[in-house]
Image 1 (cartoon, rainbow, N blue to C red):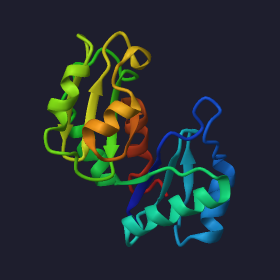
Image 2: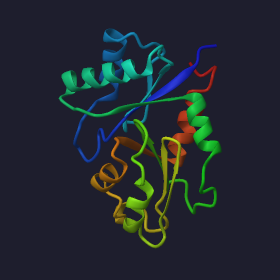
Image 3: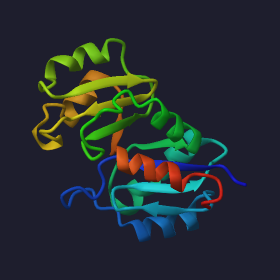
Length: 183
């Protein structure tokens, strides 16, 4: 069995901006990269593939290809099946009211020292955050994502590293899609 991974694109196909058609992306990745076993999940930028030998090089290659082909510069963040499964197992908010309102922000690298302390003042009363390794968990509470003060700019400044978020349902699906036997 081949190990599988997810390459997560940040902020593509959101409100008509940063358009990266998934069918075209799959074709380009198959033609112009060494990635194998390529598929995508929903239009928000989830590429499923066999785990590359060098995930950092693969992310850089995919980012450059997307910039060239679609004129979109977006971070590409790798998570192996084991990392996705570990993230789910380490969920600090299993009591969250809704899987759609609980998000994991997968980070490209380590967050800045003091990142959580920098973000805490921006939380709404119902919100919670926790940094678990290179994953920032955000429970948006009943008000949801649309009312939060944890904007992309605030998160980028506080964390000092790029990241991309997925709700819990999507992370569960990515873990299932990257499980061995789903190639």
